[in-house]
Length: 324
Image (cartoon, rainbow, N blue to C red; front, side, top):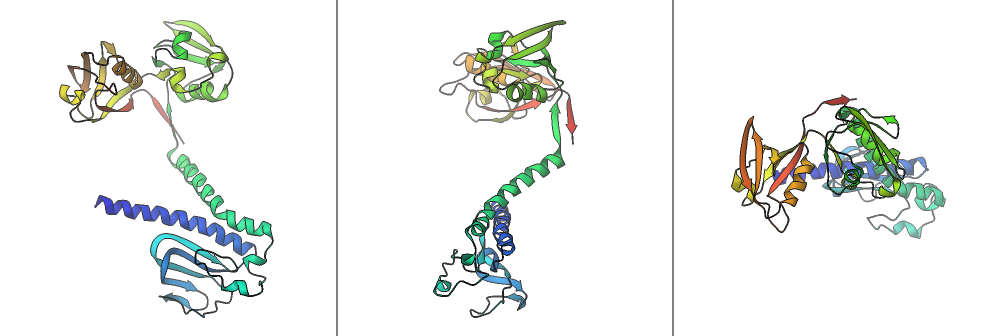
């Protein structure tokens, strides 16, 4: 049943993509003075369709029918693909009979190169426009979820931030003298706005204002992993437990939230990942929260991949704001 539904949705998506793509060819051909004999959704045998000469009709049209410049809009038997048949253009049908005749004013081959190029590339541009429209619409409908914290929950070892002296619990106030009020703004300032420049962090640590400058020479690799700072309260919720691996053997289940590992409190999922890798082949204490109950056990991360057999979903438990 799942396979059938997958095929069904696949055909819907393909149908939409093909329709938009072929519509690009169709509309530009018409605007450039070319005739479009067929606009088909699907390929193969004509199931049904409409044109101004025969009206709505099931089945195949007569081979010698003259549509007098009108388009036959049709639905064909195989819903994978589709096409527009433009007069005077060799297409997928490989119909070349028209080559033996003189070019007609409404044919593709009689038009200047710039018009032919517009028609040929219109399908691609329509697909690009469709992608833009989809993501733009999703942004308008869903809005944006903002992580309303600027407090560092974890600084990975040997990272740029760690070498500079940033620590867990530091509350970032501004970056390069520009105020930040949430983690999204913080990321924009670090990874985009000041790309290729030195970055100055102003933050509060234990009630005191502190400033740390990171020179641009240290910021050649501007990635989250290289910079090494992560927000607080991104807890590691177990999304899946792999059968036969250490996590299953010690009793961890899907939905549990790891709270401690190797004697350290876990306030960020990346910290758990780093601690697991750092304790490979070592029997290590682990604690997790299951429906409000704290459970403990021992687990040994195993080679060759230095894991315990869990899939982690980052669960943010801090304040958020939804912006339309």
